Length: 520
Image (cartoon, rainbow, N blue to C red; front, side):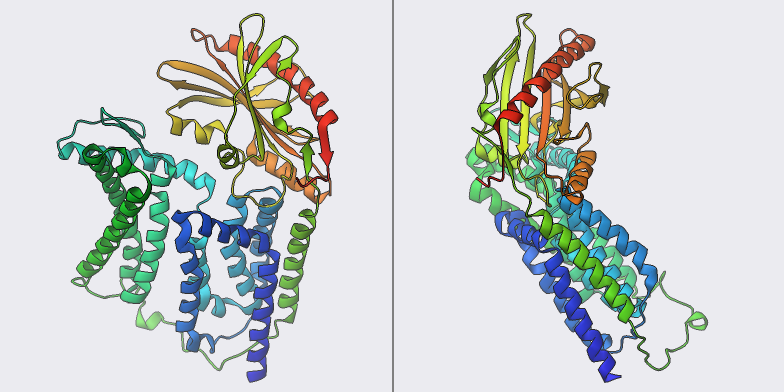
């Protein structure tokens, strides 16, 4: 029996080592985010806490009945395929949240349900070490920003200060405050839920009290973030815009987080006055399962080999794809021509920080005008090494326009009437409005062989390129033209003509200037 236990421990160690090697690039990116972004600096504590949970339960772990469960295999395959899509398709939103689930199903496959019952908390807790996926920030961050803005504005009014809100912008008259993504409360919510889980584990014994303590962190986080926004407005009115910037703003965030932590403890104190009954989780004594018999350990060699093989395959794909050479542009993307047939352009320079934050390695932005007086604003984002999981992917108008005060009125797809470089293709079509001005927007993504209107399909194209060892670049194209007197059809015609001329110009420019194998 002791020999089998020793074997299981060696297997667990080998699987962990293989897992780290397999997802080394992803884990390295996560740690870099912890170090570079103060919002995620708490991430270093999450694996430490998970390890402590395991240490606390070490005596029970010694009693685990090893019984491999191949029912976990389909679920493990699903998350591994999803992770491959994220790694090769440059989607950290896919691969990072998959990591705890992969660990959970490897545990179930190799060691069985008894092991999973004792390890689900520390393994599941690792989800909190992952930076918030962009899709979550896009769909939850926006509503949270608006809600925080409203709460903050009401607090400012209670202080006797006149204030007006427009979306996530708070107008104080003498200055404006914008509730950006970092202040939406989502990044405030994630660590507070993790803290709620740890608090419930250490300070609450009743299952229902543990559950409600974790759930309580959600309204506490939202309300205290609104308090933070309101306090920022009050301090800005008293001491100027410096109160909303730099050290003061960061210190204020930490102070409000401590207030949220105190609220959580106060809520837990109130729970002391309620009974510790396990209702509704309490089981009828007569229905409880009989005590477990003697400890058994089944041979799990086949499951162990299966898990190792899958990890080696995923790791091999990841490491081999990283060896594909970059496809750079001689003279850089900024050398793209400003003269395209009848269109004459004027280039607008973009700072390097903004380029990196937008998910591109290089970018090009120019305003073109033809002899008819039609205007098109062209933005290009370029990645010479588009494979492998990356924290930033191309930012589309859906994610960046609303934070600039634009309202998305329409979103659909547009089928180009004329075939472009890739034959029949379509673009995402959007209509955005700001202060009475409307713009028509087309955007799409293209590799050296495929073009699509969808970011997710573009990532699939990248993953397929990597699997086929077919090296490629990745290009994001965005066209914008003003809508005159509501005539969107005329705007479509303008963008259609420009797209045709641009596609021909890009094909000529890229074939002439691409450099394969340069890492500069």
